[in-house]
Length: 196
Image (cartoon, rainbow, N blue to C red; front, side, top):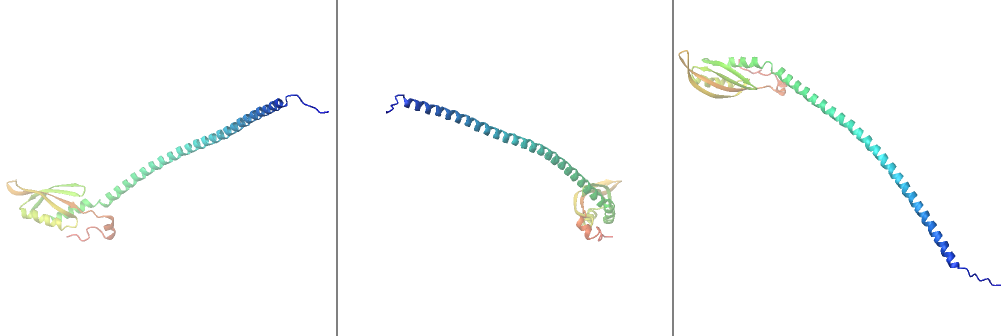
């Protein structure tokens, strides 16, 4: 006997396919949600780890900035101390300068020239005084030019003045003091070839 199935088999197949489709759709959604959640967790852990590293780096940078500030402060102190040392060495090296300047002035003053003022500003020495004649002032300038202690003498002014009923010439001049550098000190003592 032949069996004929009169039931709607196509409807059942469609229903079965629809159920399979919904099951796959739900499974896909669940799997997608799990993948997204898993990815979110991974990225969240990466972000957390990166934030911790950033905080660590910021703390280390703050420490380094403090150390840099300390180094700058120490460098400034070192520079200040070196400057003081240089000034002290300069003063130490030039402490006999006043004595040699006055000795050389006494040697180079021609007869008939008198000194009334002497003012020093750095290496510049300003002299003022009286002379019996203009020729004696010129002689003083020539003597200072040939000196081992002085250089570049310049006459400021010379004018006639009456002092104790005597007619004299009042003069003002400036001269530069030769400073001995460390190189010259190493080569020989300053003023070794000075005039007597």
